[in-house]
Image 1 (cartoon, rainbow, N blue to C red):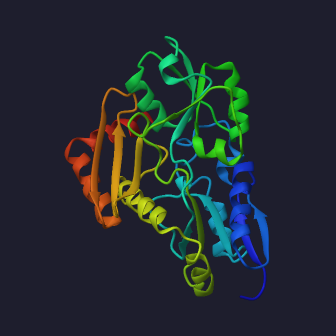
Image 2 (cartoon, rainbow, N blue to C red):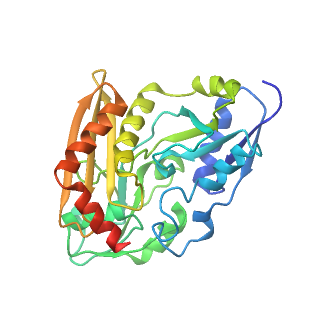
Length: 297
């Protein structure tokens, strides 16, 4: 490969950490191109109000499509479940901790009517199912901003991978199993996109991709794709390889937590597996729950 590989990324501390990780894996000259996204510019409104899933990736993807950058580095959880025409994910890097963490207080020690910070409808719905008395406080910003703002609250939710990658160690942290708090699709995974016609880059990136991570995320994204949604609605999924097959678990909830549908399925084909589990939850009433969520948007 000739020339410099330009990596487009958000400018947050975590995004740059992830991009520098990709740089360390590439055996070619590189240059990092930071891009301000819609989600970065608007820190006041909820993600649902400013467009939901995709607000952290659209401008970055445009840089690659316009050939202002060679590849794009994303948190996989920010990617819409449907690929953009002209782009492909060339590498799914090995997954870090996929789970959510509660910071400031353990879940069992939350006081009555505790104030808990999160901007995620997925997290708030699951928390309300467990603790309908809590007061959910909207909380946006990068990881350190949220931790600072969270000092005035009883607890906040963050992705465990962010804490671990940036080596942040708050005094009280509890990692929540998927049976308690189903994570977002793709959580803990770095995805690297390139142009679909860039065969040389696709070949280079394929050597970096982790097969078990790829199969797991493809199953999660297949589940999500059935509903055509992402971070703006209360949906979560988590897959992992077990004895050579994919174990996929997923959740769809009412926004107020009054009803939570959960299911799990094992299989070998990630696309088929995600679709089958989604169909099962649809038969059990998932679409009615999501319609209620949209009405509250």
